[in-house]
Amino acid sequence: MAEYRKRSSETPSEEAALVQALTAPAQLAGPRVTSREKPKKGLLEILFEKNVPPHKLKITNRDLAIFFQQLAVILQSGVPIAQGLELLSENLENRQFGKAVGLIAIRLSAGNELSECFSRYPLIFRPITVGLIKAGEIGGILDRVIERISLFIERQEPERHADVAD
Image (cartoon, rainbow, N blue to C red):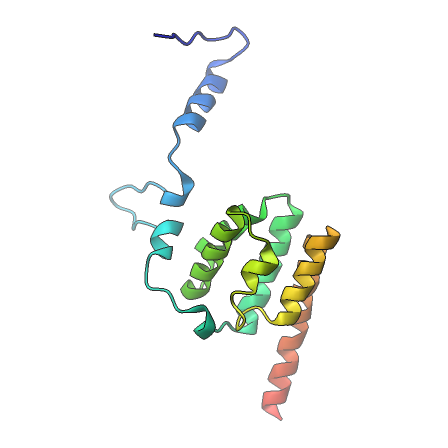
């Protein structure tokens, strides 16, 4: 049986970090909790709950603007998009939207393009949004496109409130 020998250049903290990284549970299963904490559901648990069909899922412009703002920040910070969407899905206030974003993250991890994943939810992501994202993917400027989409949605929100007040 092979025996692991500690290299002289490794410090105990580096070795502990390596062991922890190799033995850490998968992040999709959800974090461990103590007996006093309320267990937080992991992404897979959320996804296997009852889902609203994509053609019936509606999101407010406010939720959508916040989503795109957060996604733009995540992309600009260098986090992979699938991982960023997974993080967003777990933290969105609208649970049904969170489930949809979680499914998008899984599809991205499987190799689909973001624009293709968004096009599966036409009531959330309008065709113009999907087209802009497709152009951003092709041009390599996805982070800037998403930031501009968030600004566009933010600007629309006050106009809609003014239309309702009239």
